[in-house]
Structure formats: structure tokens, C-alpha cells
Amino acid sequence: MCKELGDKMIASDSLEGLACISGAEGGAERAATLFGVAGALRETIGAVAYQHSPEVEAWLEPYLEAARSSLKEASWEAAWTEGQGMTLEKGVEYALSEEEPTSPISPASKRLLDDEPPALTRREREVATLVAHGLSNAQIAKDLFISEHTVHHHITKILKKLKLSSRQHVASRLSDR
Image (cartoon, rainbow, N blue to C red; front, side):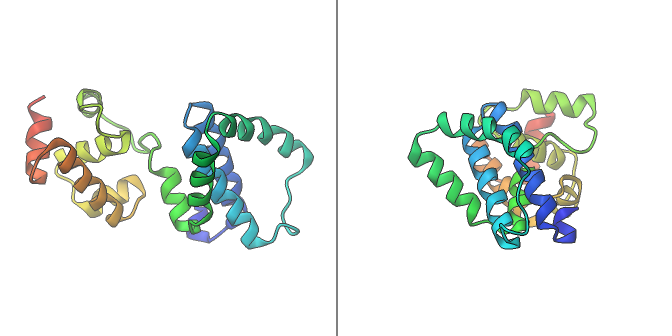
């Protein structure tokens, strides 16, 4: 909703929350990128106009430090800089790109996700499952709240990783499982 409304203030808070979750789950680079996006958004609305309360700062600090200390400085800086360079739209898309499915997954679909080779990311497995169910790029984009371009990118990576040549091959490979 923040993306649709262009609300950078609430988006930055939300992205920081997702950064904390990512860091707590061991995704320090992802956390750094999300903290970078959130910081950049806060800068665009003016640091003076929007400061965290001391309580929020105290709550965020351990997550920020834990993520930062688990990465080499160069890795932290690269991830942070990547986030700083993202627009609101790209930042939200990135933040949602590895989230759990937002729509209920049937037991059969869950089995397909679990059986997929570990070389695919969680989102790629999710996209592959929807491809296997015959959804178009536009339908997948709508279901997963991502752009059609991102869906196309995921499908291209899936085909390459699985050494397949078409969407139909993805569908038949998953249906064989």
C-alpha cells in the first residue's frame, strides 16, 4: 500500500521491520540492503521532518548491529549502497521478493515447492509452481504483487538453473514429481 500511495515515511518503517526480520533469520546482506532502502527513503523526506523516537532507535539498534557485525565491512557497504540506490518501488519489490507466499498454497503446491531443487530461491520455486499451474506472467505478477518484468526475470533464471527451454518443460518437470 505504501508503494501505491507513495508514502515513504511508513514504507521506511515497514522496510526497517523487514530488515530486522531478515537479520534475525540470518539474512544479514538482505537486512543491510533493506536498512539502506529505508534510510534513503527517510533522507528523501528530510531527516529533520522524520526522526525515530529514542525508544524506536533502541529497538532497532540491536538488529542493525547484529546484521552489520555478521558481515565483512565491504559486504555491508555493498548491500547498504545497493539499498540506498533503490527507489520506493524497487525497494518494496525487493522487500517482497523473498517473502512467504501471500496467497494460500494448496498441499499439492506445497509439495511441489518442497520437492524443488535447492538451487532455486524460495520465490523462484513459488513462481515455478504457478507456471506449472498454467498462470500467465501477468497472473503470477498479480498474485505475488511483483512486476511482470520481475516474473519474466524469475522464469528466465528458473529455466537456466533447471536447464530447461520452455515454461511447458517447467510444468512437466514439476508434474512429474
